[in-house]
Length: 380
Ligand SMILES: *Cc1c(COP(=O)(O)O)cnc(C)c1O
Image (cartoon, rainbow, N blue to C red; front, side, top):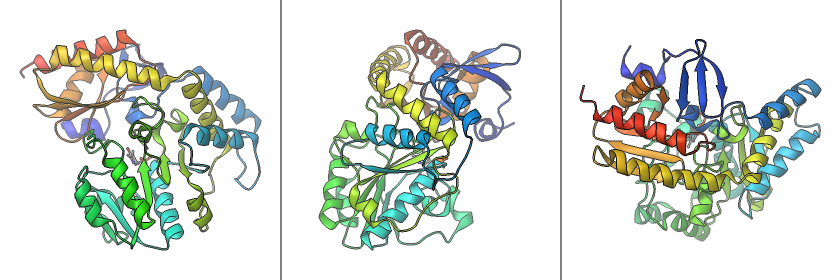
């Protein structure tokens, strides 16, 4: 098995049970989950609020399509929209992150009547044809070309290059507030504000992809709130249903008014809606974004003290953490898992990504740091 197989293929760890930040194999071996399967379980595994809501809903009404009003769906929409910045007033649920971005690009085109999409280098927006066209890496795109046209890439974080690219023919600028798959890249202060101003000037839509950054992880419910920027379209998925498959798109009124026909059969099904409502309500009511900020600070301080000399840089905000290593991240992730029972994720060749559930406490952070210290100190 190659190192790459370890992250993208099957890991030799057969998991049977999850609870909070821990996963267990059949023989009871405990793993600390500091990857949360790509940020999909912000409340930890099998959070009782979500489990109860889903179990109740699946036995009451598993599914009817979105043409029928259902309380669970209305509650989910209300909780989701209320959690987003003021100005985002309508929402639509889908089944994944790529579908959320696919919808965002369609909405931007229909609302503006323009077609050009401006995206960033090192972006990741998903693997369906439209979202893939706005994704940077050739490895994901080349075998499937031609994708949708009219996408221009600009260097992420460079405000001048963005200004040059955004014009009257632009339908949307799509950006991650902090890039996830691309290596936990935090843009310079003021970059998202510039993107907001530029899109306002030409009447284009600012689409912020919060599929990975959202749900309290960066210290605010949504990372755009850290920058004080409200997009025209906010997309999310991953943690939205604490592990159930659901994506969400929240939009400003002019986008909703300009949206042409778009839907999906499973949109806002009652079971995933129950999961969304429970997840968002619990995150908001228990202020997990504040806990994520505090734990992020703690983790960063401990990491700097323990392994600061062994690594090049610590990046990110809150519990979205990237460590720029001096060696391969795949091997470090593998070593952490196999020898220390800690699950982390690579993000590119040399960045180790930590996306623990937001429910971790200092003892979990300490265990993570101790394991990392051992892995980075080993010379083999
Ligand atoms: C994972 C991810 C996506 C794609 O989400 P899927 O649910 O896998 O389709 C899109 N954007 C970002 C920022 C992501 O991290």
